[in-house]
Length: 436
Image (cartoon, rainbow, N blue to C red; front, top):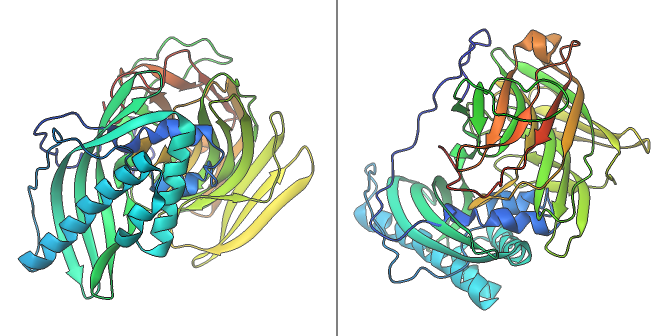
């Protein structure tokens, strides 16, 4: 994550979660497979239903006998029996989703989830089936705190998943999962699963990958497995805006990309976003959509048509308290979408990002979007509207598991508010995705 001081030039090294114990078998980048999943189907109905996908996507294939579970537990004073029951529900949920995907039987997941979370799991499995994932295996779980307050429980699990794609490649990834469970009719059910470390920004190597693109590539000050663009921290951010031309995506590059502006998300679990996305399915169909998202809720597609080549402007503005106005304008068609929402934000950062969407257990492969041009980037910090340059925004390079740049931002233009992000030829599923 970034240092809270915008004047600092070197990003902070994020505090990694406790390393889970691997006892055997490789992890399946928890649905990273989903990666492939979302892309394909616009069913990512949110941004690819990034919404449902963003918080769902779990497993496809039931863990094999080789998959082992390690329960290194740290709990508070919660009773042993209750802790055991909660862990059991989470493990059963993982296995149930895997079986449900393998058998194409969504009902296998119904007994372990609330109605809303069940719908997310259903959508996730559908996305996986459309995305080209052939199998996913949970190979390890290491436990963190389990805290119970009446009929609500919070549990932390470090899960390792291995994902296999239809081209024969596979990925392994370990993620921290923050589960929320609710007791219904005497039984625990999962109501939410958030991966708070998915947005962690890593310090870079200090050198710029070789990339051919309009504009000089920005130094790799920071790198991420799913974000590329710019982010600003320090002070209180109450508005952010940015404009871009929706990229024309290559139909042969199965995957997805999402372009957005946001408030929060670098130093906490909150993140308010609005943008556009493209999804390329296995049959070569490309679908474009506009969406909004308020973590930890899943993303939602909004009724605003967008196509490749359209000029779009997205703005988030805090009216007062927790009241925000989200506006997305299609400057080409003159159509627009606007809504007022209630959201508790940390107001701690502002972002202008090109993303490889994440979905529950992992990331969606980044499609070949060419070059994205972002203009008119600005944010209101401490009551003053400023450009990215004035804010001291820092560049973020998206890398694959092998450390190769797959989406490289340029240096800021002379106006301090313009930059490009160029997709390189490096594969987005190369090596182990996640923190390098």
